[in-house]
Length: 396
Image 1 (cartoon, one colour):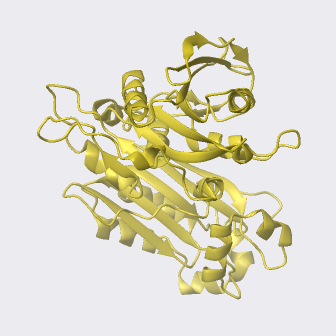
Image 2 (cartoon, one colour):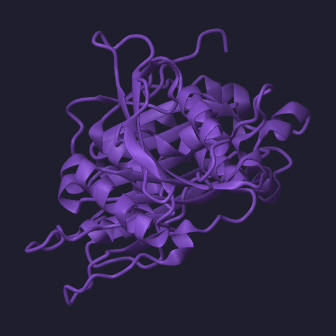
Image 3 (cartoon, one colour):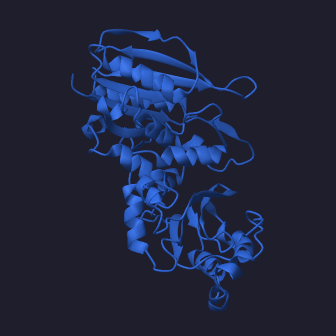
């Protein structure tokens, strides 16, 4: 039996998700659809309940709900997909995921080899990840930071994130962004421009033309991605591989890429945040803080909420395990940026927002870097600097 084809569809509203699935079925009428919903337990503890609904006219499958299961969504969906691959008439499966799923890490986990069944890539080729976006809902979510919601990718608890963070991750996971245009209404102003800046590598299109005529999605969306798609997904989750800004900057929405090869002073960076975060809708990257010289500190912001977190360790010349577990893209970048004294250490941040004062942001970040005098004090002098961002480390 040859490999099947797995398409993944996500939508930020149920209606948009359904519309995109219908569009894909026009291109692949014999595909089987596995629609998924995930509900957290009443107290927000333990594994979620995963409900699945299976249908597909081409495979002569009547629409039927599969038995609900409580457990790790990755394990449950792997079992479903492997079972479908053994079924006749299921050569192409469309996995329709809900909006409370973090699609990219879920795909990485789905493809990760298991001792018992190998990799899902032994059974399926991956098609492009297609994300449907209702721009009005997206623009409301990307500014919402006053509450949190569960985002599932695997495990028992999920991750608690703001609606703004969930909306940004959904857009960033896409190979294709589909923006349906409801009849009688226009696109949310600035919505498509912001989507393009947040994910410049993705195809962005609407199934409805400017003249109101229906347009088919490109047939490439139901063809396999190049070999190594799972490695590409994993590399995009690496904390030391930040997204580069879209070059096609709009009139209002723009992106700024800032990088530097010396450590940041945490107190001065704290003072700079008011300027740096002004107008920012999305920020991603990594920092080299002088107070934590061995730690990769990730910068992740969505809306007005900023999270800084120790996410990894910088690669060292005498750390073969670290090099082996890093993605090929990170190893390549580390070799490219390697410094005899600093190694791969560097700061890289991409900021996207409305009416960004790029010069003011760059100047504020540059002023937060260590001066030549501070740099000359070496590691012992750096680590003695107070760190109001992540707290002081005891026993340094």
